[in-house]
Image (cartoon, rainbow, N blue to C red; front, top):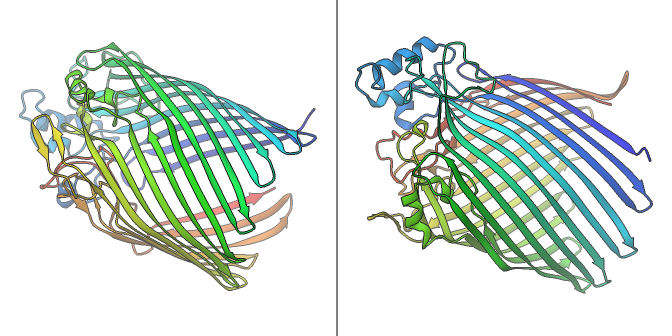
Length: 549
């Protein structure tokens, strides 16, 4: 019972495109498989070690004043200390807003191990049963060198961490019964997740490493122990009504219970919350008009469970008073989706077009109070309903045996349907666009591959995006052009294939905002001072050598 083994190893070490610091990742993937008749057993072990120095979060105002290449002070610790002493209210100075222009450094450290085993069994000619058991262990930490808390020796900077540990295990099991015109599927999923999270502070010096987990905290601001239990059952039937007509119907029942206990700190909530829906229906239809054309449609209801965490959009991320204020209106977010479309193909082309409508109910919004590095509890509000409508289309051509042209477009409109009441204040967001939801995205790529020479050139457009709920703050649209070219050789020494590829990203060196919401979103930012933006990289050149055994 030896079976087949698969092993892969990746070691990545890249400099940041601006500022100082590296982004490192080491990953192992091991897999074993064994066929036993028509059944198959398998097991896997995946590990990852990630160490990444972060970029400084910027605002529109900061980009205007200092440019989009501004980054953290790292590794100039003296400059960070000087800024903290002169701008941040330390050592008798007066706090000014420029305190938050630059910090010393930020980093993310994460160690993951994922283990699992699968039994994919054929119990009879028409019955299969697949079960996977898994276990995930994680140790992670986000580091931020903050000027808002001094180290015990008087250094006006300390290391503020958000620490987390995950120990979760679960089982996913699905059975299929092929009854001719009917394909019955039944499945269950159980998971038990222990999640520990804490906010701690460590002494900072010029020698403090951003690539290692710190030890010996001098302050624990808060510490939580969360347990999340998830159970799901699903049942569906795919019915071949006629040669060209297939109808699918089913449902899933989902329950997620979170127990959160505050083990250190004050002013934050403890307790249990549950999200449960016993009937989430799914319906689909597919009608084949001809050998190359088909129509399809889907109806689905889904539920989004709460997050078991003291950060982000979680009921536990606010104060006890804030939690009590929303407790009566706290409901899990649900969505109803309607989608219909057409797929077509022919000699030298493939295309599709679809339209959708999604109605969300009971969406939670979180608003960060103060700068993100201060770590203040968020203000949570139930925004009520959100509606998303849109049309998506894709069309690809094979212009010649080695030449292809792919195009896609997405047109959407996502809006809040209700105003938000925060305490005694009403935030007028009804009819406003949803944050970080562009209306238009267009992609086009021309590719060539004759088996030896290969390459492509692509254009990527995205319309403006809002990062304030009232839509008074946004980042402009952007268009990027990327290209690559390479050459492949077959059967080179021990290698089955050897290829050399050169790539250029952002060919025209455009200045643009890549990520919004890196520090969450805000109700309003008319002056453009909320630091939650990450600029995109300038024009970059890459050379890749790949060998396949």
